[in-house]
Image 1 (cartoon, rainbow, N blue to C red):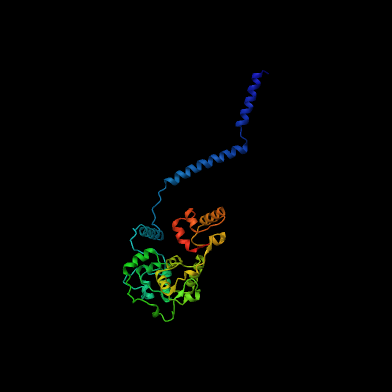
Image 2: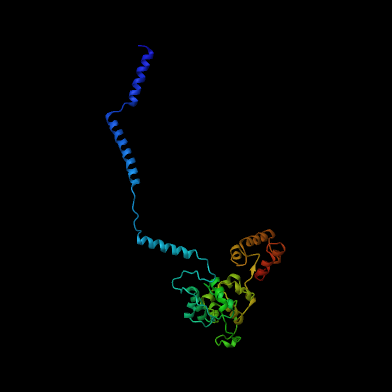
Length: 304
């Protein structure tokens, strides 16, 4: 047998092995072809059917209608002065009228569409003896929003009061020293409750004492009413201000002062270490350790 004939027989055997299907494989192929033809036929048949249009579901129609109405409301342009609060306990409409915050009743406050938090604080402030002397005092009520104040300010009418004097309050016998009085003494003043009295004492201790009444504005929650009361019925005993010895004070004591930042404290201590000692507080200004405004503010607390 020649080599050529042998190669031809080997090639025929390979072709038979590739294309010859056993009985099981032939049945599987026929089934697959049948399913393919059947699926093509079903798809063509379903596409040729005409489906009659049915009536839309009533519930679906109503849901779509409500959704469109909701979207229409959201697309409405914002109207200045309209209350955007979502509190469920507030009236939907706003009834604006001239009122005096010193005398308005709780029911009338409800008509102004204020938040319950602001109304409650306003009534507590009045109950504690506080008075609104200026229109801007209402803005200081905790919880009063800026847009509410702007909306109500044109309708505020304050009844003028006769000037007060220290004799008009019987239980105030003499002026109270602001830098040495405890919270119990401060509570005896009008509009100064126990919580606010403790706040005054706490901030006074951080400072080391008050050297001007303007520092009262730095107390959290201070308003013009309380500020005026403290100015009238207290006295600044500046001799009792706690001084800071720049040559012995430590980091923790210095950083606790409200007027100094961390960087300023570090600069002061580094300067003291460099110079061994500080002969006068003005060195901190002359050597640009503190800026002029900051130095003027804290100078009364420096002592050597």
